[in-house]
Image 1 (cartoon, rainbow, N blue to C red):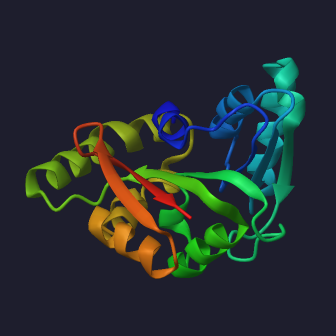
Image 2: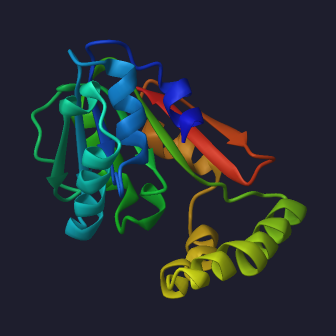
Length: 200
């Protein structure tokens, strides 16, 4: 998650959006980056995830966390005006959206010209070795650990969702097709994860 924020280069006082924010990990990091004069909007479709995030905000209180606003909403129809944000992050969310081009169009729309989006997710590798190792990790580590917390159903879909996801090159192409001036996909974690950074 910190890699996602580092590549974004959010600055003090910026207005940033954490899309598909889940329980808020990236939003909390962004809050510290932009400081009390900045603004963090954290959007997710799941009210349960937003409730967890809000509880964590109270539990791990820092003064800067006052700049976070949790919003229940649709990533394909963002409730923000055009060119509003200085930066957008998506952590493990784009892969799960039914219309990825529409989501990218919405991200493009709400970003200010010259600003960036940083999208962190599992990497759909073109390497058979990395894909096999990734599947082994999911089967033998991720799902068993999730099962011990009663979350096996929530994680068993991972392999299929990664298989249906876009490769790094396809993500770069998608970003350019919706209007981003440049886009680069970085493989991280030995190729198990990927981070797309695109400039409006």
